[in-house]
Amino acid sequence: MILLFALLAGLEEQTILRTLDAHFTGDYLLYDSQSKRTAGSRGFDAGTAVAIGSLIKPFTTIAYGDGHQFQYPEFTCMGKDCWLPRGHGKVRITEAIGHSCNAYFLSMAARMNPADVADVLAKLGVARPKTDVPQQTLTGMGAAWKFLPQQVAAAYAELVLRASQPGMREAVAGMRVAAKAGTARPLGVFTLAKTGTAPCPRDAGDGFAMALFPADSPRYALLVRVHNSTGGRTATMLAPALHRIRNGK
Image (cartoon, rainbow, N blue to C red; front, top):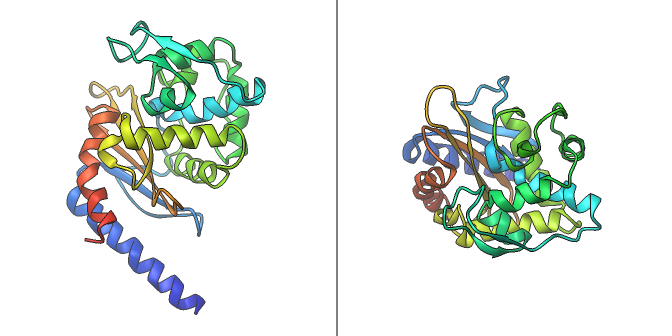
């Protein structure tokens, strides 16, 4: 019976990978949270660390909660210091994650120590980054922190597994907002998701998206990247492949 389940899981993974190869042009890494291994990848160098932009925000959320009794502020984003010129208006932590509000996270980061976020990452299996970095690093701005792609995917998978814990709960709720109505909404409620845009020396930037699926009990963490893009556009490009995976095509 165990062998049968393993064979079925292998067949499912191969279907997902074939769908990504045929219907998504960017780089990807598919991580299986049950077997704790990379099921397949394209375009990512396993030994090359990358800047991940706003994919850092859920981990910043956890670290802030740890230091503030898991009481998160309400903030009014008017567009200053944010990627959205008109602003996001009044937001709480879940909306700030879901809409990737830079102004909200800059306000939070001003009251944080980068070492606290490094500690959270280390507990989730990510190699501890340096901590003498600008506060804006905690919002995903710049390239002061770079991470190995598999460690990022594995950390997201572990975060979701701990979704009942304070801090983790808010981070996952924000990822649900992102997939339903935020920057990752093209992916839909089949996923828990987060987007990010990181600097790239070759072009305008790298667009990242993290999708964990199925949303109710995620088995797979899918990290994708598109060069010369934003996280939102990358989610849009990934959506056709994810919809096929959801429908079993």
